[in-house]
Length: 130
Image 1: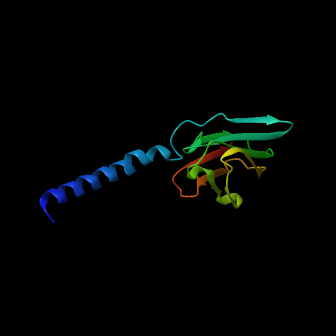
Image 2: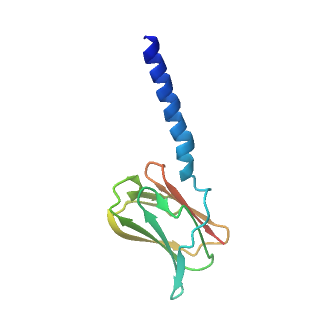
Image 3: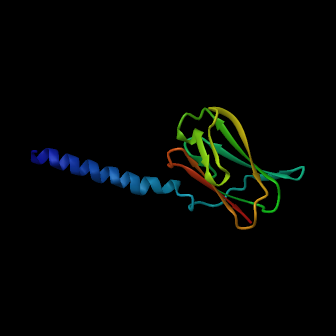
C-alpha cells in the first residue's frame, strides 16, 4: 500500500469517528430541556411525540398517577424513526409513513421513565413522570 492511500484511509477513519462521536451525541436522551408536550383531556393525559429524522421532543415530562396515552405523529417519515420500539411496554411497530399511533401507557408511577427507540437504536426519546 502506498503512502498516499494510507494517509487517505487514516483521514477518512478520523473523520468518520469524529462524526460518530460529536454528531451522534446530539441524539442522547439525556440532553436538551424537557418538552412541554402533554395535555389532560377528560381525565386522560396525552403526550405527543413527532417521529421524523428522530423524535421530538427528545425529553418530555408528564404527570404520574394518571391514565396516560402516547401519541406518535408521523408526516412523510421514511427513516428508521418510523420503526418504534418501547421495550418496557413490549411495543414494537413500523409506524405509518403519515398518521398517528396511539399507545396506551397505563398509569405511570412517580419517577418512572419511559424510553422509546428507533429499530436501529440511532434515535430515542425519554418521558419522565413526576
